[in-house]
Image (cartoon, rainbow, N blue to C red; front, side, top):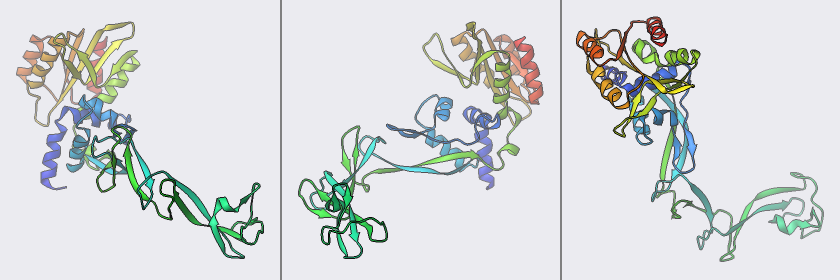
Length: 325
């Protein structure tokens, strides 16, 4: 990777959404990110859609992570989409080469090897057996006294026969017919972590999985990413939302802030306060890796946001244990 790519990766690691995705790889929740087929939309990535909070933009997001070397990819599939409505709910029609109708009957050609007679299979069928229409001998030994000699198509519209049909596509959603040349031919990839990601990333990227597992071990219901609707009607996203099954209204929300500098700035505190003010959770916690700047500490205390500073996973989990207790 070039120095420019390394710089772009460093910027990408700061992205909250990238941290969530990498955390799923690090925790073992994801080993390989595979697309899921949807008959209407084609291939989707539900895990990424949940992180982004929307169904659009997933392919662009993953393409960027591939381009900067965070993710590796390999070809999973290629599918045709309708050029009119972009649906993947597409069928293939094999059409008459003359009139283009797809009302085509497909038959197998059979050759009777001893006498050389070739015709469609239906004309060999006599009372449940195969018999040559020319010499009237029974065909009993495949590849010895008879063999399949290809296919033969007959158009039910114009009655013409041919061996190779013309292919077209039909959209089941908007009912448009189109050719392969007119189609959207889209590729789907499977993704894994890039070679140097583990070495390059900081501790904070990989904390989500262990924190989620710890909370679940304490009988919390956990959502990551966690979503809460505020008084304003806005849906807010947190790295983790946790609650006890018997007290679903008592939510604990956790956000993670990391930096390659000596201390995290106060900006994540301000951003979290705006969300917390709107959703009013029972507890709000911000985890700063490796530590929070002095201005951020003062704001966290003012906003009543529990601040955890740690340089190690062990330190974060110990502080989280104290918070839960």
